[in-house]
Each structure stands twice: as C-alpha cells, then as structure tokens.
Image (cartoon, rainbow, N blue to C red; front, side, top):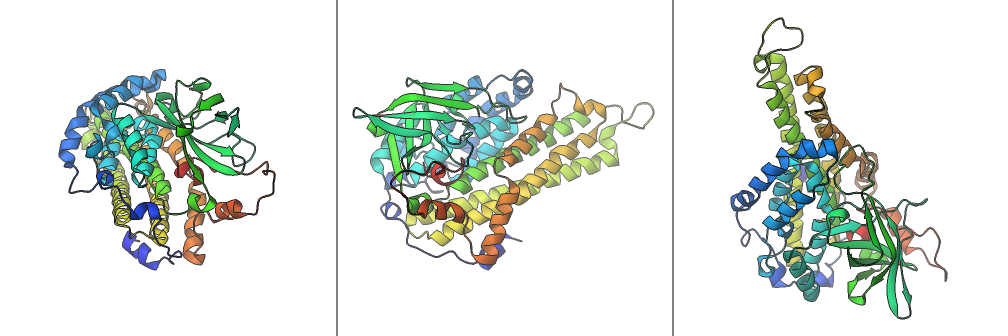
Length: 454
C-alpha cells in the first residue's frame, strides 16, 4: 500500500490549530530546499571522512574501541551542525539531506549514525520552537563544537523513571541513574528527562559538571560502540538557565514529529547496515576461486546461484531504502507545514503512523538481507576477520529498541478505531493527581512522551 493510499484511508485524528509557538516563526531558523546547499556539495564534504570510518569499522568492532577519533573527525567537518540554519553558522540541510547523509554514515558504521540520535533530535526540537533566545544559545553552542547526548530511560521496576530534580537552599540539583543513554559518552552536553513531583522536566548539563559519571557498560550484542550505557547523576547542580522546559500533559502529546524523527534514525541505521552487508558480500565473492560442491578452481561470481543471492539482497536493500527516503520526505513536508503554521494534530498523527508502517517493512527486509548475504559463501563467510555477523547483530539490536509488535498494534488500533498512538500515556498523565506524588508515575521510554519533547 502506498503512503498516499494509507493517508487517504486513515481516520483523521481530531484536528486542532497549530500551537502558538509555530505561528510566530523565527525566520532565521527556517530551513528550506531553496536555502540549503545541494546534496552533492554536502556529500563531498563528508565522504572522505565516511571512507575512513568504514575502513576501521571491523577493527573497532573486534577490539570494542569506542569511536572517539571518528566522532572528532565528523565534528571537525561540521556533521553535527547539519540541521542548524546557515544564519547561525550551521550547514542548513533539509531533512531528506540529513537522512541521506546519515544513511551514508550508517553504511560506513551504523554505530556512528545511531550515536547522533539524541543530538539531532534535540536540535530538531529547537527548530520547531519559536524561541529565538534558546535557538541562539543552542545553535551557537553546537556550531562552536558541542555534541549533545540523551539520557532518558532507566532500569526501574516500572515503565518509568525515578531520576528527579529538587531544590535545596535555593539551588537546583538532579539525582538518579539513566541507562540506554545513547551517545552520551561522546557528548559535551547531556539532556535528561527528570521529575519534579508530578511535573516532567527537561534538563541540560555539561558532562564535566560535578556528579556526572558516564560508563560504557552497554551489554547488548549489537550497536556496541554507540555509548548506550549508564549515566549517573549524583546531586548534580543545575543552574536555572539549564532547566530547558517543564511540560503539562497536553504539551507532552501534541504537535511534534519527534517520535517519527527518532524512529527514522533507527531505520536509517538499519538500511545503512544492509547496504554495508551488500557491499561486503560483493567484495567477498569477486576474488574467490572456489565454491562449495564444485571441484577444482571455480568463479563464484559467475555462479547463477550466487547471482540470485546478490540479486535478492540488493532488492531488499533497495526497497527498504526507498521507504526510508519516502519517510524523510514525509517529515520534511510536515516541517514545512509547521513553519507555515498550517500543520494540524491530524497531520502529526498521520505522519507518526506512516513512520510506524515504514518500521514494519524496513526492519524485516533488512534482517532478511543481512542474513541471506551469508549464502554467497561457505563457512569462510563467517570468519571473524570479516565480521559479517555485525550487520545482523546491529540491525536486530536497533529493531529491538521499539518492538515491532507494539507499533503494529498501534497502527491497527488507529485504523480500526481512530485510537491515536500513546493514548494510554495520555490517560495516565491526565489522571487527577493526589497531593502526594504517586510512586509509579512514569516517564516513558526514550522515544516516547517527555523524551521526545526535550
């Protein structure tokens, strides 16, 4: 089913006017195709860096060497400024341009495209708020070299968090522990979701603040170099200006494409891994002179069975990339509507549903591709020197961030009953509150609610 067919057949969520922040746009913070550099110019700037990153990907994987040097190269080239408008010293890339470059980076090493997830999501949030002073602070901070990490989710007994902000003697502090804090190890600033009683608060702090500790203890079998480990906040002082936003229930769940944006970064990392597996599979076959079950010298690159494998893998990757690119264009259209002040809540919900639909197709296709590629050779294809297995492990890990079955159910509930995603969370936050905070009041996972609005 095409995106256009899906959009026309879906029941519309209740329409509402765009929030006031989007009616008063800061002209210097608007990015459009007319003001952005062409893609060839942007790509030429970064492709030499991508090539060096790709050349060291297997060695980093084998030794679990965190990509500090590679992140430094990307920073020096300005990759982290892609979505910052030129008026603030950034590169002013459109959303399709951003995701195309993230895809090229993901093909070089999907760990690196993934670790920038929180950084670009935070900047996207600033672009969509007509808060010129905040834009000035954060855009200038990033163009001066800062990289931002997210510390959102926690390993608590409930689907929420206990990290809190509190005040003592007129000063603010935060205290708690975060996990799955992707990219934070590489960051200069950390954005965290915390609680102040029943309020949800977004807080930023420099990584060198006293009481901040970052640990590379991510034990997943894939995406090992994304820095998705533990971040401790032990009575970390927070100046009032670093308390970014406080959220009401209505602010948490309306007028944002952040979840779609965050999901698309995962999808982009997966498609990039598929492209890398295809490239490495072809590179594996071309020089070979023997194949299973064929006596003497042979040329596997001329074997029709190998042709079928490469043909299938390439087709799966092509189709997944086409859907990834369509989702990026979808986000760009919504961003432009937001800039114009014509975006409605129905537009945001429909875009979110389409991102969920893309997820349902892209991950299974790429998982199939990075598994089937092993059929190009025998046992030698499993050599540790090649690490073809890293692509399956990385894609499987990225796919597990937001389980497909939950998003599949959300799509069905929306199409059948008009139930918007996160309906249960909305109900939770809109419940009448007692004087004392409920112990299990929740902060959702990294690409839900508070985390998305940071």
